[in-house]
Length: 169
Length: 429
Image 1 (cartoon, rainbow over the protein chains, first blue to last red):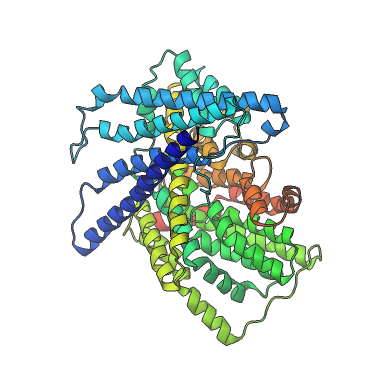
Image 2 (cartoon, chains in turn blue, green):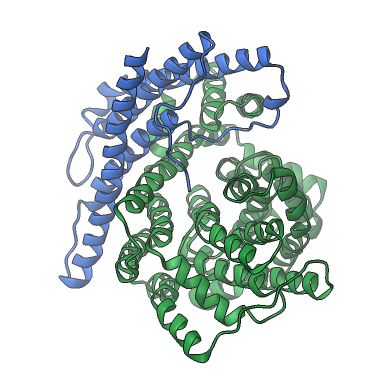
């Protein structure tokens, strides 16, 4: 189990690195766009398409990191009032639902391949499926981490965040 | 029927501590299965939900807020506001509100204000002899200004989900934010002058010191002018204004020599995860939006409301109460994403401008962060100070008086919000 946690943590760090890199890249690309417009009376015509593609990568990999850091929004108010056994069963159900939903999204995202592979973007003519790939990877990652938390809960072990220390400021 | 399934599933699951994104997602799956829809709609509408250039502004403004904090701009602003506002009744409490007004012009989220400026304000007030729980309550109440004074992440989300002009929303936030700040400052002055709260005398500054603090804060003070000015002049779009804010924050950090490798990394990681969590929620809400649109929920809700009352004053009062209740139990972003497409047509049926309603809606929902049970601001403030949640709640509740008063004034005097957008962009027909 320790190895699974380490593998998920390493995967999470890689996702974090790529997602943060995308944020930096989007910032630089858009800044370059403004600079080109005013400095050289020109424009980077493909910047919007690439920015949106990078945004997809940042969002879905970042969401996977969010689950690994357990930095999502939940309402604790009612949960705290329940008995310990009920809390255990609710936590099991939560992770089962999170895993199922993420797996459904990843699966049906992949099933869009035949529809999207021949549809292209306007400027760079990139297949639209490229934009769906981050969703598939991110949701598959969320499904894996939720399954891991579910497994820990089944064994009555505390599901400590795989990537602790990430705080939302 | 499908929308009823979405809402009921979401509410039940969310109340049982299921993450908000999963709760909405499972609700959508249930509704699609019940209605015989294809589950392929889920990834399709998730992608569609974030396929908007304007949403790029969200990560930029989140990153800018964190970089302003990391680079030391926040500390300079606080010192400057202490020089200017420190001598009026309420001293450092007034400084907290004023500093929030300026900092809100640079960052777009209440929690960024709380984590940076709020922590600093409470520390300064505690050292000056204020009661810590009062200091924390002032910082928390003032952080409401963050999403109202532009740039604002909430406005970007509202604009994207209701197709409202982001430029007009940003301008409308200026008047509304200043009104809230004035009412908060007046309330603090009354509390202090009535002797309900001890207020130690403020530190006197020499003219030389005041000039030095102003000079040091000048680049930071120019940030809102640069960001909003560039938008007003039509030089940049809202998204590009976000990029401008990021690069201005980097330049300020370099000037103030506030960046370290550690705080830069923390700012970047935190901004990435926070932006991703907001945008992932927007993506999933895209599926819910599709189900609600197919069900014509907004239309039915508008008809139902206008059948209850045709009086706009009463109608807006009911909407305000409804939004305050929603803000009590839901975090601001999901609350905004779920309710904006439904409530905006209702407000329009009462003749309320969507820009004005955007301000009212964001204020209603953001008030939710200062009181239980969903008061995220309470949790943040309680964790960064030594004040317990119970004490924090007791100290913050009186601040609902000026905040609710501001809400009423802003709701029933549209000119407060609308004078600036009308002046800058002209009146809408």
